[in-house]
Length: 155
Length: 114
Ligand SMILES: [Zn+2]
Image (cartoon, rainbow over all chains, first blue to last red; front, side, top):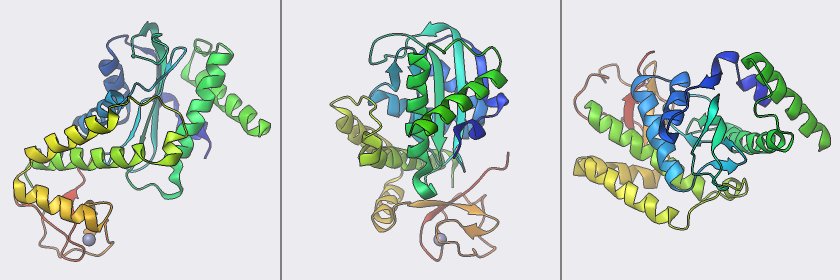
């Protein structure tokens, strides 16, 4: 499955309010769900973060979990103007966050495949210094699409 | 079932999926950094959640979890999505009791319409 196809411009917020790590996660979840469903997802994501930060270094984090609050794979992306502390591996603050939530049952293991793909794309973004490149959600989705195409070609 | 019980069951269910993902080799291969004491943290969190549930519900959940990977199932248009059997019409989302599927026994919850 193509990652850019899972993203729509209303799932990309390039002016996310900087705040604490928990607030960033919460704001992104609320792009996808509201109410009890959102609270359930936030709670599971924060439990996952306690096991080790999903800040993969160089300014990017990829919080993720499965939750019965979603019925299909859901993705949201946020970028903050001012980097926020995410307890990342390299201790560097984070300004780009990919959030991925998968349903409990997931035929074909789309969740882990997509998660792996996001990690790869995130590494390309840091390598080429593209975190701040896109100016609009549309541009961001195009950027992701281009990186994904290049990665597929290389294989 | 009462909202607070439903929420705790769902939290427990999500936590159990988190636990099984953390043990999954294809998850580990992705390479997220995991703290050494992660599995202890998970066990502690699981016990905390179990304690918040009425004992008989916690026990029922544990028995069902051994039988099926997914101990609770949503209801969609009167079907149990655990076993895909049609449910008797008298089962109700508004019940204050725990409702289980007469066919597979899973604990049922009704998805809220958005
Ligand atoms: Zn059933």
